[in-house]
Every structure is written in structure tokens, then in C-alpha cells.
Length: 112
Image (tube, rainbow, N blue to C red):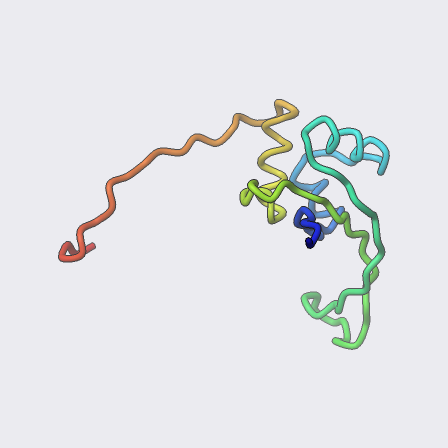
């Protein structure tokens, strides 16, 4: 019988902190994750090609800190930076939770 594990999402720490509007120590962020119900599994340093910046050789590499975050398998909204930031901002009271509504799907013969 295979053991099922929760999905792990790699999120660049600095981009996440920018979306959250503040910086955390690793311990503070781990506590926040625990309170919310997700787990900061590990903190790693990864090399990333620096191709987005002008004047930087495509061979130069930048080391970034990445948070590997375990999320529950039924929380598809937490599988990306934006989803985790939205959920944590709502959890901490920094923003209102998103509201969703149902819409009637267009019929196959209707035109946009």
C-alpha cells in the first residue's frame, strides 16, 4: 500500500513576503503556516538563471531562498504563490477573503 503525501509547493520567499506585505523569520513563518493548517516543510537555496534583468549575462545565476510548503490535497487554491498569499492575507486580516459566485454557463449556440 503506497503512502500518500501532501503536495509540496516551492514558493520564492521574497516574492511571498512582498505579497504578504511584511517579512517573517523562518520560525515566524513556520508558526503562521501551522496556525493556518499548512506546513513549512523545508527552506532551500536554489540557483536561478538571471535572464529577466537587462545587462546581466544569461549565464549568471542568482541564489534565491525557496519555501517548500506542504498543502492539503483538497486545497487546489494553495498550489501557487498567489493562492497562498491570498489565503494567508485573509487569515491574518490584511485583506478580506475573496468572494466567489456561480454563473450560468453559456449555451453552446450562444455567441460572446
